Amino acid sequence: MAGSGPLGVPNARWKRHIVRQLRQRDRAQKALFLELVPAYNRLLEKAELLAWISEKLQPEPNDVTPTTLQGPWEEDSGPDSDEIPSPTTLRVKWQEEEEGLRRVCGEMAYQVVEKSAALGALESTLEERQSRLAALEAHVAELQEARARHARQVDAQRELNAAQRAAYEALRAHARLQEAALRRLEEEARDLLERLVQRKARAAAERNLRLERLEKAKQAQVSLELKKAAKRTVSISESPHSVSQGIREEAETLAPTAEPLSLKSEAGDKWKRPFRSASATSLTLSRCVDVVKELLDFKKRRGHSVGGAPEQRYQSIPVCVAARPPTQVQDVLDAHLSEVNAVCFGPSSSLLATGGADRLIQLWNVVGGRLEANQTLEGAGGSITSVDFDPSGSQVLAATYNQAAQIWKVGEVQSKETLSGHTDKVTAAKFKLTRHQAVTGSRDRTVKEWDLGRAYCSRTINVLSYCNDVVCGDHVIISGHYDQKIRFWDSRVPCCTQVIPVQGRVTSLNLSYDQLHLLSCSRDDTLKVIDLRVSNIRQVFRADGFRCGSDWTKAVFSPDRSYALAGSWDGALYIWNVDTGKLEGSLRGPHCTAINAVAWCASGSHVVSVDQARKVVLWR
Image (cartoon, rainbow, N blue to C red; front, side):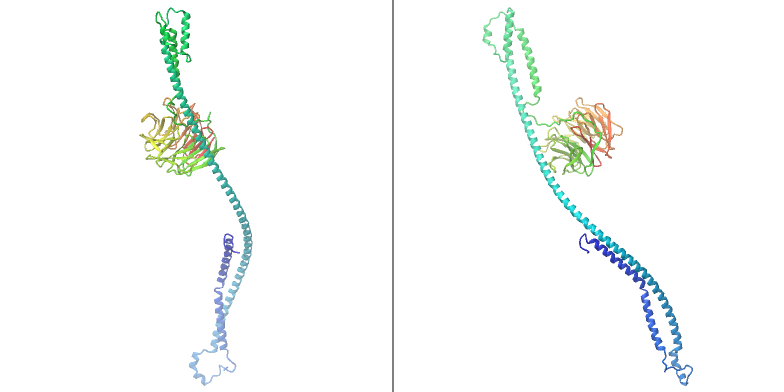
């Protein structure tokens, strides 16, 4: 019944066990007779020898000679008697040997009895083992039947799993096709939106240009009418009726639809005393003031739109009316293979990106209070220190320890662009308000502006200290540094416009949605709110137990700027109320190591925190 394959292995095993037991029994029983058989053989040899000697020594009746009858011839046989012993001596000797052989035979018989008893005991043991072996063989047969039954079940389950896997692969392929179609539709929608915005911008520019031309024509006509009205004179002796009539005529002249007065008719009139009409003068001044006001209001409305359509900008408008601080944990995941350094929500609040020291960027979908894996972005040259979405949510920008920043397009696994030019670790990378511009900061004491359309560094700003984080406004770049200072840079001015010192190395910066307040986190274990309208520190937040866990600890505003949120070295989240300046509370949960970064989605419904133990926690 032994066979090759998985089913034959147990049969070969128990057969080998039986053969091994039989050999051991043979060795044990053979050892008992190893001494007995040679001794028994020697005994038989001695018995045969003794029988042969006895047969030789036994005298025949005819040859018997009395020992007492000795003749003279016996004296001559004296020498021969020394060589051949007498029968009496031989008989005594034979009796002694026979007695010794009897004793040996007795001992051997005793040993044979003992060996027989031992052999009986071994035979009983063998019978017991044979019965046990039979029981084991029966049990083995049962197990083999059960194994065959389980093997059939496993085969059926494998077939079912294969069918389910095939169905899953088909569903996955269909989902990929659907996702590709969705991304294509989203791209088309974005392109349509961009074209629509550009067309509206061009239409607005053309409309502004037409309004400007009409306003200039109107202003020129008014100026001409004012000049003509200023040349008119009235007589003092003119009656009130005629004066009022002249005023009405002049008012009609100033109307846009009225025809101008003829200089020829004015020259034909004879006035006794030239006098400038008071009503005409007052009307002229009021009209001039109104025209100047309209021109100023028109320029304010137009802003910088003269001269063509401006560059398209994306401004994230939060849909959050009033944010609520998080209170409970909704999901916990081990998102990366090592420490997680950065986290960022997309503009839609449903897409999340995390970056870690394992050189991977994980994209997650927030669905029903759970984090579902969306995509893994590969190809980073070093540990990820910062991640950011562009204003349209279609690209991801990451800063790495490989002296470069890299750009991925959402939906593509490999990086499509690398921004190289720094000579040390890149610690921060952020998009500006357009998807074609970005800013990076590095430990090489530089801040760089990038034109992403050409992957070209358009400007390099040299700083005196390491840069830990950057944020971007309309025309301003704000950088936080190792030397405990926050610096402001204008894109239109080559030098630093302002420096705000803080107590402690700056670890992060966060700009409010209205771009009027800046939140900074520093290694003196404090958060500071800076009012950018007056360029001064408005509030300082600190709490017992709160400590920055690293030089890249990130703190954020809530979307409505009502709260400030940061993670501590002991895994707790601290929330401050910006309006009152007091600690709103602290949350302790799954984190057991230092929290590196936090993110608050634009809708205000979710908060995500990441730590040094690979954990990503979704709060609500």
